[in-house]
Image 1 (tube, rainbow, N blue to C red):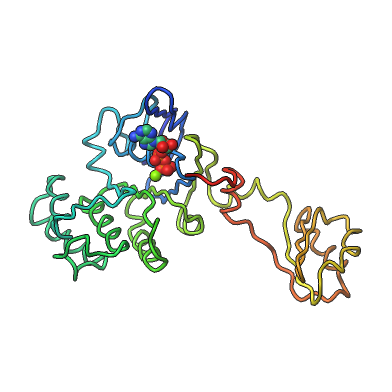
Image 2 (image 1 turned 60 degrees about the vertical axis):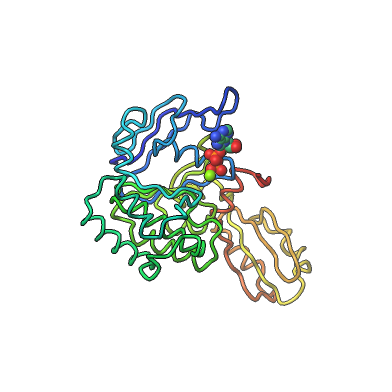
Length: 309
Ligand SMILES: Nc1ncnc2c1ncn2[C@@H]1O[C@H](COP(=O)(O)OP(=O)(O)O)[C@@H](O)[C@H]1O
Ligand SMILES: [Mg+2]
């Protein structure tokens, strides 16, 4: 695996007492889309700040494109683009001027910069608004402008800190479409609360909480240890509780509950389904469906259901 990011025992303390990142180990493969999930306050933004050299770790090592964050800030900043959690656009500059300023700060020659700005404004669907100020933009348009800015100097690695938080469903979809369209040409590292989106878009996912890595892998790998049998949903034509006695006797059923006409059966394994089906033969069954574990189940199982501020 060629690594775009690798951290070893990374640690960040704010002040003397509070540890925001603790013994954090992470590897992100070059060219992949990697999602970091975690409740508010987990330490996601702290990690991105360290990886983009906006902040220094307290101890441990972080390599970005092979460069050490402690010694090669300039190299790392030229190879990475960042979409910060807050939009951070200059409200006194037009959309175009915001991009121009960023390009100049990155030392891009004027003709290259002009062409690149036109291309990105077009790609992000903002060409018609190039001379308007960000304050007149919707949340989704501002986000797209920040993404355009992050892509301007053609980074090899793009960081997106909650790129779709606070956007309406249409804008969220648009932002994900753009992310998908640039994927493959660079490594993408993002944080999000939208687990379903992460599930569909990302190659690998990590879950962190309280500054620590809790689990990482593909969606499939993350779901595996949790399955604990399979759950089937059975809909009857009438009240499901009437079939209680029938079900009670079945060995393969490890648990069940019912609500109205629907019953949930937890089976030891999917092979038990035929036993369940024959046990229910004669009963007025309308529908049997597999209840799939979602990434949200995984997330809640690892981080608990308490609300975070
Ligand atoms: N500059 C700071 N000074 C002190 N504490 C901070 C600072 N920035 C973040 N924190 C704390 O560190 C923890 C992690 O924050 P953050 O990295 O922003 O989490 P996330 O992005 O996952 O919501 C939180 O408890 C937060 O309050
Ligand atoms: Mg954050």
